[in-house]
Image 1: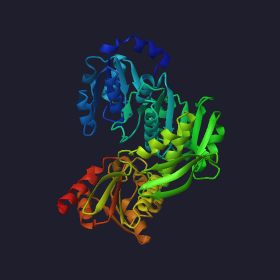
Image 2: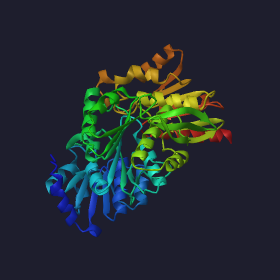
Image 3: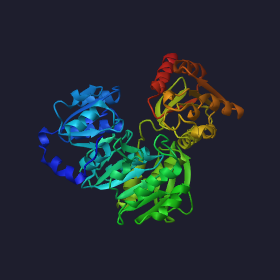
Image 4: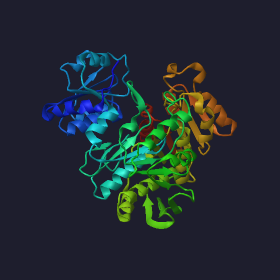
Length: 487
């Protein structure tokens, strides 16, 4: 089994390696974060290689565009010639043949979070965006605000901000924005990733039970966030969503400055006179009861208003002018697969979203329904995450789709990995929705589900796809079909 050495013993060895000729190999390179790390290292001048079991677009084409060779499958052959450093991805198990060869050869290695700290965070002011929901949008907003303010930030984000077209950037500014994931680091380090990021500032969006494959219960999740709060330095800042009852309780433990945000009258940062006008969400951002800036943004939904408030609080802490914050809010284009518009065909609007936790599904459905008031909303949901494929949220999902007019749900895949008594049932969810007089359909075959969707969609409909995976590219496949019919 691999055993991590003290990081202080690794640093001199890394510094001795000739930069121009240094070879870094990434195991599990096709993960979103790992592929971005590969791109970042390539941009820094390192010779980069990788290996993965599953190699497919968009990560495969992204790595190919950077001329980074990727070996299909894992094995000792991938470590010949021996790299100077190996970065071990979260998907790698202790029994992986390449991991066993890594241990035998006694090569230097780091986990992804350790590598991110060493190559991108050290020497900069670390801004960590954390929480069960909203991390990607809030991190993208923070990066765009700093860019708009001329700060030239470094960032690593779990999605693709449309303003940048990439989820990583090496900047020359003082700040690095990191999406801080509570998922475990590696098979040899079961602590959460965000504990490696040395935060000066933390935005904490929400704390709920998730990742049922590694967390026992909500208390176990809270323990990880307590550790994150504890490592914020006294001269740092915690920006916390006061509307979340768990956060409201936990922030009392912080020893740093605290700024709260939310819809609550008790929050430091609030949205006053919130309204929709001409396709924009508009409000006055109030700080401590005093007007700070009039905000206009194409984002919609209460969850996105909270995300924006958190970043406005951050900008104030960093000394960014209200004018720059206004400009960034107005020009922010959103994030790929967060209420992303695929297109409109045959009079129907197709959206793609990453929502998978019942809270995120509920917020997204409600936001889309409000934004497109008067149009029929068809929700298409894939239970794919490790939590959504378990029955821990079975009853909550019925509430999550309350605002949808029609719901399509496929049977989950990879259920053989879930104990029979713990498995989520798409059929039961459909029955629960039908008992509430809502139309809902379950499918075992996704091709048949696509056929049924094509026949069901009418002009004026909004079709909202939700999944934390690729979902067989169904949003674009439906859009192309409707385009053919339209032509």
